[in-house]
Length: 159
Image 1: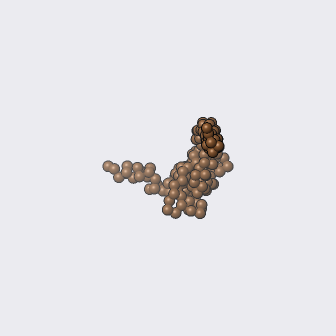
Image 2: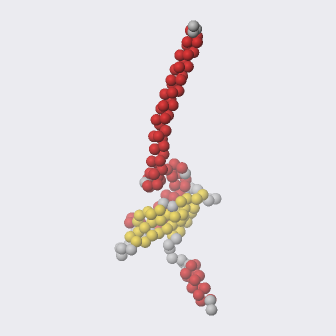
Image 3: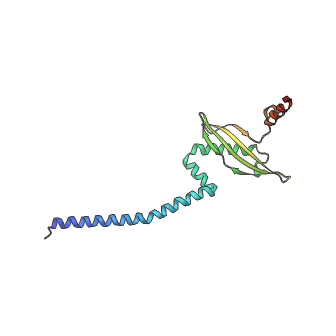
């Protein structure tokens, strides 16, 4: 014969077991949904630029701000800033005094029908101010500064 005290304990343990079983069933239903969501988010990050920017901003807001500052300055240096499209967003690396942003790339269609690409890199201080912007496609200041100038000098010196 069961005592009333044992009967109360068995009722409590049955209730706890039932709650635990229901909790496991809920979790088993949620796991596939969570996995599907993570895979969907990964694909969206790869394929949708707005999602990529959103995730990048969540991960490192300072680097994202540095890339945006560099992008705006680089866009302003293109001949027709209103008619360019951004090909690559670039990457930011932390430096001792701020960020170095490289690989910001734009493309512009000239009136002659030729498309020209511009690749920029920038130095950004900790306050988000652009210190320097350099265009990798810009002609060198003088022939001596260019690779072609080095080749020409080597050709002149060589017997």
